[in-house]
Length: 256
Image (cartoon, rainbow, N blue to C red):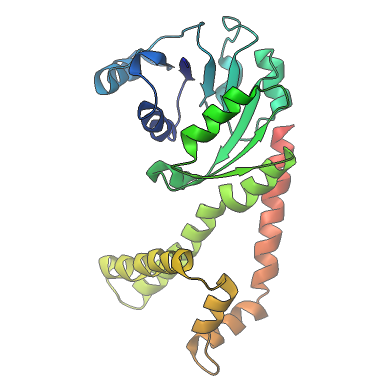
């Protein structure tokens, strides 16, 4: 397989490193916007930094606002596009690239440390050999979830694509509260970050469901129950649910 990267945003290096474990360097090409970036890439990865119109697969790794700046006319109609572009639908990608051979991908940011989740939707025209290539490339490093409809990409974007920000936001609140309780910034970060990280690891390793783990911490008449009651009084569940609905509707709106 010959592979072309077109431009790059922050997630591309993780994807490149995955591909370099499975593909020969001479079969990977990268095109970026600046000469400085090209020189840096060539020096660091010893790969080719130009646009090759004989490739089999094009990885679209541009920011949504830059998508229309790309000239796809050099590529033939049989090329398969794997799009990591947030929000842009297969329909809109297809109009631009003049092809229906598209896999639309939505990762979340933990893929930066090769522990993320990747959801994908495959257009019906993509050949099985390219589907196999995609799955075999990423299934060792990420949790892959096949979406049967493209709209599920929008729903997943609202829940898990944005999900890390929700967890970080709550962690940020806890950290700031620790500072107000007169812990130093370093102490506050140690307390809260370790609570966040090890709770997540416990969830991953435990045979118990998340509801049961939460109940196990929420003992009757004690501090956690008092905190949960306060959250419920202030409609915490509905506020979170409504926020996710807003994110989903925004994702649908943008993808049009």
